[in-house]
Amino acid sequence: MGDELRDVDGLTIGILGGTGDQGKGLARRFALAGHQVVIGSRSAGRAEEAAASLGDLPVRGAENAAAAAGADIVIVAVPWDGHRATLESLRSELAGKIVVDCVNPLGFDKQGAYALEVEEGSAAQQAAAVLPDSRVVAAFHHVSAVVLLDPAVDAVDLDVLVLGDDREATGLVQALAARIPGARGVYGGRLRNARQVEALTANLISINRRYKAHAGLRITDV
Amino acid sequence: MGDELRDVDGLTIGILGGTGDQGKGLARRFALAGHQVVIGSRSAGRAEEAAASLGDLPVRGAENAAAAAGADIVIVAVPWDGHRATLESLRSELAGKIVVDCVNPLGFDKQGAYALEVEEGSAAQQAAAVLPDSRVVAAFHHVSAVVLLDPAVDAVDLDVLVLGDDREATGLVQALAARIPGARGVYGGRLRNARQVEALTANLISINRRYKAHAGLRITDV
Image 1 (cartoon, rainbow over the protein chains, first blue to last red):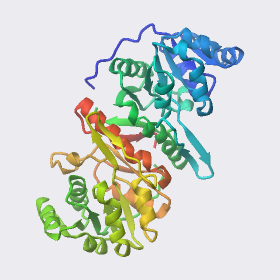
Image 2 (cartoon, rainbow over the protein chains, first blue to last red; image 1 turned 90 degrees about the horizontal axis):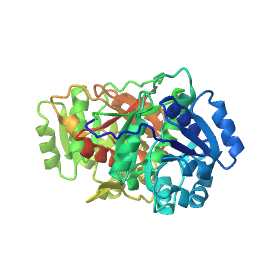
Image 3 (spheres, rainbow over the protein chains, first blue to last red; image 1 turned 90 degrees about the vertical axis):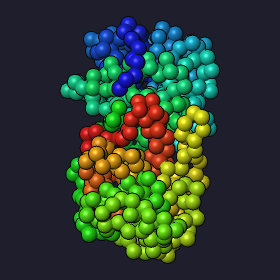
Image 4 (cartoon, one colour; image 1 turned 180 degrees about the horizontal axis):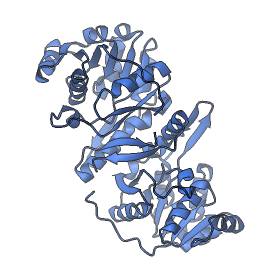
């Protein structure tokens, strides 16, 4: 793809809200790739349980603040409802760090999923507004938790779109995405274009329902 | 993919605003697939010129109203600026027909492309609001005009996301998309989720710029 990929070896990954399936799935894959992972939660006990549920892997659990403070890169995988409040409470722990937002602001009704309006434009832009001293990147929106957690899946079949305004940070997160076997990290534009990437998850949910699939995206010609 | 694909053989395709590269590219591929195609424009002369520029193919030019009236399926490929007015002026010609909106409401500045706000949510939803008697489907947003027009490209490497609330209509447009060699038509959700599909074109433009590519999307696991 001609993009410089930074070395992410040895980085510790924190995952806020890591007790959900998406967070656990990412924790599992990054741990399998050799990273130390800290699952964060409001409750240290639930974080430790989630870490233990992944078996014999270098994953531990901690309260969100400790997970943020102890990690080199912090992934935000909290429910949309608690997104702003969680990030506001962790501003100092996240200062100076790369914060990777993978939250999809979605609503659900009888017709399926749909995108919610976000005052700042997107969850990622909200994170950037709340965390002016962090380097916010948007990524991992479309990765199926089911696939990440499935021990029968050795390699995924999808690309991770990585968005942000800080080229070094997006390059590093692209390299991190590539640690998931089968995945590529593809630069996907600036943070102002994160909204549609988050919202596209609603379409993938429709596709999954129609085709009984765990759909992913590949970007062709790159 | 397990989806029933309707027979589109013999259908005449009208392309409003077909003098632009996107419209001409689609005209070329549908004509190569054996369809009669009518390129529409505000000026019959310019429409005829565009048709002639495609060489020896079953493509003719006409004013937009005649192109709409003479086609079985009508693709809307007009510039976003003229989208609402053009559709309002063709309400009667488009009544009862499948209208396929492929318009991307985008703005451009020094940082590249970004999604514009649309009162109705998306260009496709605007079309549905303006054309209550038509069967509006959204599709063909991400197909590179350069690739469609390139005689060296025998087959494209992308899927066409097809969105709409009328299952027969989306099925037919999926089948139409599959007439482009290499493409599949993949159901992508209801019209209320068209906004992010249109807006994602801004991301593909960023990807094209970064990787010097003509990026497309593939949907995996379907």
